[in-house]
Image: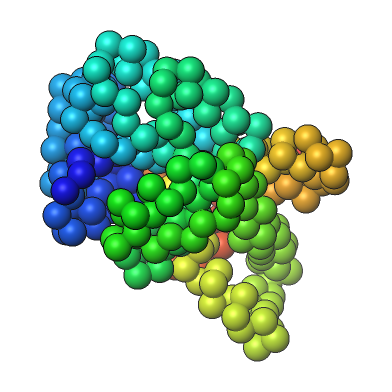
Length: 295
């Protein structure tokens, strides 16, 4: 059975690691410089901690990079540096919410170190990797990756071109995050006019599928809004690279960044990271005076 490295076991990473461990894979990571939260999540998934990234390279057959978008280039450079000191060349899989341009840069770094490279993205709720997540993959090593992990992770090959999976993630993310952003703006205003209940009831009656999705999406934003704003920056840059309109993407980026700056989990510790409902998030935004502009 192959050994899989996870860089790093955050929300999605530790749940991917948990699934792979349940299926008998050796799952390893290093927690040097990682936060207490990441250490806690890694311990929950019983992922084996090694003392360095070099040790991960020396043990892993496949390394999955599952990190915030802004960290992707740095992690790829750290990995490439570790590879230069090792006698092994694991397959490196970038599974981050980054633009095709960013993943191309990451791929150049990895291939220059002598490793094969795969572009990927994971779509679905981190809490249910086995049941509801799909790994979309592209690149020349798709079949190798699918053969290795396809029994544990639902795979959807997109093609042989690096950048396809990253573009897919960007274009998917723009819709769900755009819905959250526009709902936040509209319901903050609804609270000013004291018609939030009626508005939500109307949305639910006319758009039941959309509201059902938002019921599980919105409660994740008090903790994750800032990171998702980073993803929307990557989407906007993707669209602008194509000389396409990015007005909605830039607006979503700004709205989510403002929500992230509110530190809702700090202001409302009774809900923590996970115990929010859609209604509680929207009411918290109203209480905090979110998304206001100076007159």
